Length: 83
Image (cartoon, rainbow, N blue to C red):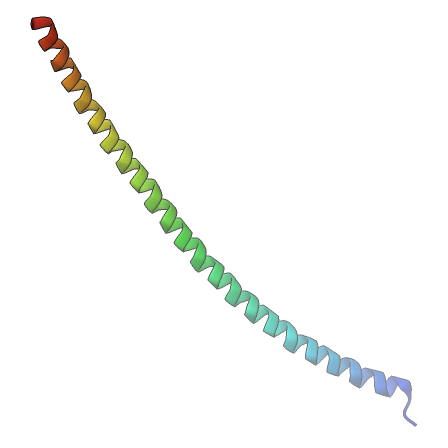
């Protein structure tokens, strides 16, 4: 019968090899997931910039309308005083 030491060392080597293989698989999957998250973060950044850009344009358009309304109100006030 084989000594316990002679059985344990090969089993430990087999376990170590299997663990290294599994850890390599986990690392590979983790890198793939991280790459997907990086792409998604890039998309969110682009969307955020687009939404912010639209809101800035909306503010400029609203400000322009406000200025035009103020000008019309001033002209109307001047006409009311003259009339």
